[in-house]
Image (cartoon, rainbow, N blue to C red; front, side, top):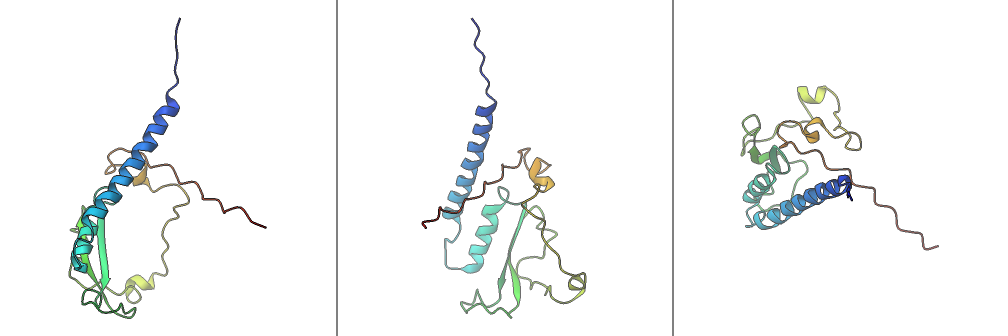
Length: 151
């Protein structure tokens, strides 16, 4: 007598459970470590630190200059780099520096830029490229259907 068992589906399910567990752990850690004080700049640093390396390779947090002073945000105000953390931190604008205005200058003359669509294929680094610890990208989230009509 021989017994055969196909574990393909079991392995796929275990992989999805591991991804979900890692996401929940990241949320837990963020809840514990971010916002420990009312100091907005320190909170920005905490946010950047908790996100690297589990969520991003490099994180920058830019704030309007009025926010750390406790004033209302001013959309016309200048931005400054409140925090930078990660592998690309040496190439990024350092913390405490004003963020260049992107609406003028050479970068703005190149025309509008759009982010790649996340509805398509994941970016190459999300598919197990170097720096992702060899893990494949998680499966896409299924669309949430609209609730049934009550008419």
